[in-house]
Image 1 (cartoon, rainbow, N blue to C red):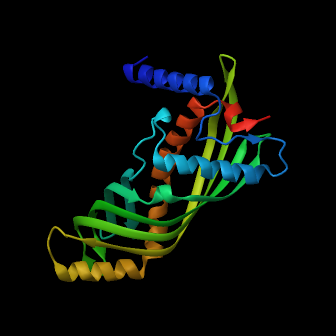
Image 2 (image 1 turned 30 degrees about the vertical axis):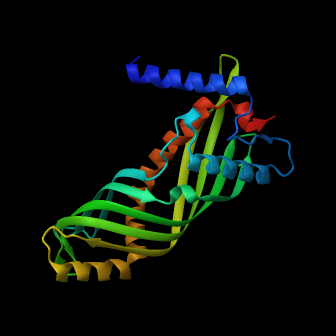
Length: 249
């Protein structure tokens, strides 16, 4: 076992030990499986956890929650040698932690959950490089990208299973899916490397006139990166918090 794995396992063991010694931790609100209003309870519990995540939960190694960083997102428009290609690197998203869980649907017998989220506004900055032709203009080059996404709604589906470790039940993530939509989008590019103000203005006009279509093309790449981040986050929670602290059978 490598040094990093040993450190991660030790951190998880220490956190679990602290939680076990102190009872239900302050950032959790357990729900009773037989509660007739279980989905209402789970919605409250999810928002209770989200509130503390925004502040940071050092016991779980959660400190700086903003920005959310995605290493790379890709966009492709058209085919052939003149097809437009853009790569956005070091994508920083602000505002995601201001989410509200608007509803939860659950089947606790099969440990399946669907959570609905709302985020009022997300702002994004990144570097980008592009090649090909866009609106009949050679658009090869690079610069800075910015985006403002308002009224973001998302749904996340997860399925888990129980696993017993030294007599304690933990959750194991088996499946994770998500989708999202955005009500209003503003986005654009600036600081083009070639410094051509006419091309920059033309591209920004096109981008904002077709923002929803562009988001649709970017969605598959965005979802892959978001799901990787979400999986890591959920697995961190499940590895450190016993099942009984989530759900009381």
